[in-house]
Image 1 (cartoon, rainbow, N blue to C red):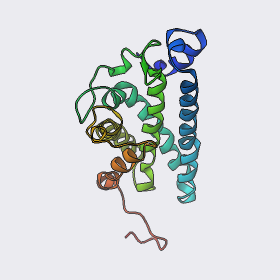
Image 2: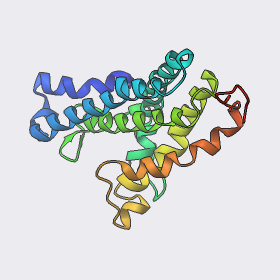
Image 3: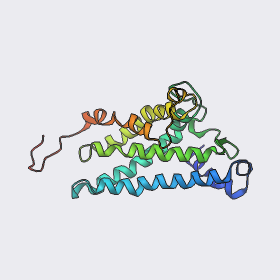
Image 4: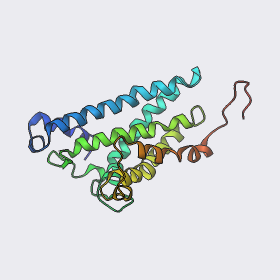
Length: 212
């Protein structure tokens, strides 16, 4: 499978395939709308927000970090992130049956909607959660380091935490945790970012030009 698998929901709706007939059309339409809204929160929403919080010379660099993070997370999500986060496995991490989105076709369903729609919806949250991170190190981290952290963190931290809360066999889900707006995985996973990024940061200059 490739990144084209994320466009399967549109193909299913267009050709009237088995998934389109079996899935709930209202739920599918709303999940697609919600996916678009979450993506708009990131691009351009979060990019413009963070761009407005830094010095003029760093506006484009900060906005580019957000856009690049969205691209990197999309790749890691399609390669392994979705499988580790949303597929059945252990109480702490999912299995590998959807590695490279293998088996994600028009006939696969998840919760009454095509699984491709569900995967794209969850991808939008993976993107915005990771894109929140530059606010912790704005103007203090090299671009290559940002991309490396985004790739590693989206797989090693975000995917397991999402599995804990959203997968039926996740240990927090088993305890009865409900995460309607993805707030739990945002808060749990993003708290660790500043400490993880600290070794790669340079000191931020104060208004007087003296580093703290």
